[in-house]
Amino acid sequence: MVRKLGAEFFGTFWLVFGGCGAAVLAAGFPELGIGFAGVALAFGLTVLTMAYAVGGISGGHFNPAVTLGLALAGRVPWSDVVPYWIAQVVAGIVAGATLLAIASGQAGFEAGGFATNGFGDLSPGGYSMQAALLIEIILTAGFLVVILGSTSKVAPAGFAPLAIGLALTLIHLISIPVTNTSVNPARSTGVALFADTAATGQLWLFWLAPLAGAALGALIWRFLLMPGESLGHLAGKPEA
Image (cartoon, rainbow, N blue to C red):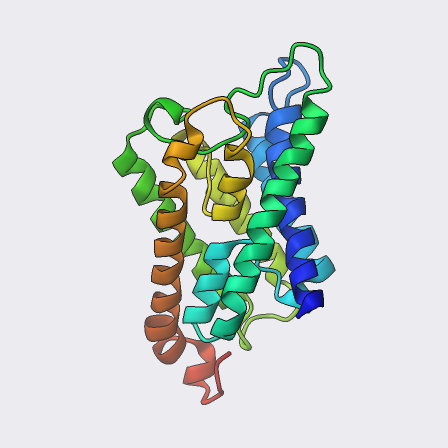
């Protein structure tokens, strides 16, 4: 278990530091900034690289919502859920603190939103709480379906990290204007604690919506796709 928790810690740290770091350190320069598309790609690359690096140790969750979804889908024991959540959230906070230490080395630095998630005044596009709740639930559900499908026994072996990383990139391309994209409570918590806005007051939504979406995606996979429509079932093979 120690190795699993270490892998989850390091993978989640990489996700928050790399993805939010791209937003804080690299996205804002007028001529050299990577923009929304670059930030979306950065988040996808963090998951892709760590899934290959340590996914074989812990399963490569790096996200409390993913851990919940995999438990509901019967992929991981429920006894792993709370320890994984603790490792992931602590890693997110450490990554946020590390990023702040680096970013504050620039003259005139102000934390501002600090790559946090939000709705209303804290939404990049001014979207409402209802819009934020809906998109976070839908995108997290879709993310879980991609994870469960790409890691099932009937999926091509070795390609799951690519599918998962590209899915997270797509999710960010869709929802950065709405919520600055969470689908991951550890990512949201890790930077909200250091922002100069009211992000912590909205943090509840970025726990509730991803967890609800993960549960929805897991249930869709387990009770709709896995038993009745998977290639494994149609061929008479056991499903993962």
